[in-house]
Image (cartoon, helix red, strand yellow):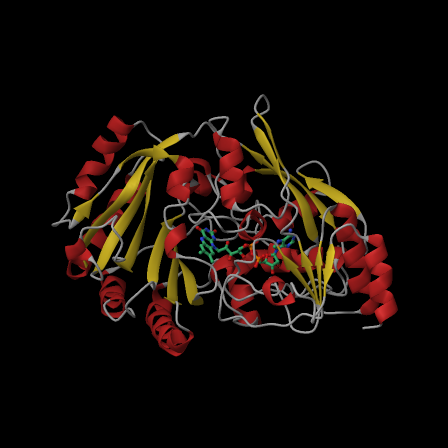
Length: 461
Ligand SMILES: Cc1cc2nc3c(=O)[nH]c(=O)nc-3n(C[C@H](O)[C@H](O)[C@H](O)COP(=O)(O)OP(=O)(O)OC[C@H]3O[C@@H](n4cnc5c(N)ncnc54)[C@H](O)[C@@H]3O)c2cc1C
């Protein structure tokens, strides 16, 4: 990369340009997953949309491999690249709540925690994920599954408008009314279509929730998983809870006799008032013999950040995923078999319900194509020690291979590693062809290809 072209870029941006050798380079190149060890040639830490336009222009004219980084949480490390340019949006943290319109406008460096903090002050929230350090940008562009999915839909179901810097350097607004094809594609199609510099979301009246975990011995998996499936699919939409396998962490929050015990669990979140939530969830919380039932009222941001201390950045992560319509007896048996072999520590399995409000959006209404699935399954291998990398990867792959035949066929793009084109196509199913045409229109040279890549159709639309 010619030094004068970097100097030219430096003169045109307000944010920082970070290159190998700079004192901040080693920290700046890191992403959340400690397994990812990539060395970009240039990191442009953008201060505003003008910087993004300049960075995209630099990428286009130099032909450098280009990654877009929001919160840096992508499991496969798709927020960075080797030898290319990283358009780092982490410093763009502006947020504006409009309480009268019940909307929030968010810049792409915001985490879920940033957004929840801002909206909570107004007694409102919009659906995000389940860990507050995750980037709003990447999470939303892939769909956005979390505690509020049953009552209020996916993050994309609440997205009203985005500003996007396109590969050719133009900046456009996309909504139902403007550039509607682009708006359709960014709702689930990931970072394929340009760099989003602003998200406008609809807000809902959510301040306190009734939440917390119920744990059962892992040996009760059969009974609990069957009961959970039956319970959650008929529960009112203001009751939610995801099913999980985990090892109880040795922290004061949990009784010492449970420390390091493998359990199956439901992590509850209900937007109904505490009495109603208690009444509605009681039958499920009484199934089998729970080891712990710790459910009560808490501020929504407290729930969102409950797991943060256990999952700091820099741990080794390997995950695989699939959408699921239902868990039959054979699949439940395989879950028990493989969850029992979960490496001790932080590895987990989550089963998120994606029915309720998310089912009221049609299969082809957005790029997210699994509206007919009831659950998003993710098998997560986590270890603080790099020496544990092989063990978590091997366990995760074997678990996935055993369960994949019982899946709906493809995975949520935000829970995928780098798994090849066939898996990307399986993630979008019938929506893939339309996505490829829109990609052909907005990014025909595939400048934005460090992602779950949609290959541009030659002709565009
Ligand atoms: C601890 C943890 C918990 C999680 N929990 C959930 C959860 O509850 N629900 C859920 O749905 N997902 C969850 N995820 C998955 C998460 O949605 C993805 O990892 C997502 O990619 C993270 O977005 P990011 O902005 O942090 O990532 P980054 O690594 O910064 O970006 C990921 C990709 O998103 C794209 N991208 C990011 N910003 C932009 C932008 N402004 N414009 C265009 N493209 C962009 C790029 O293609 C990039 O490659 C979790 C991940 C982790 C690590």
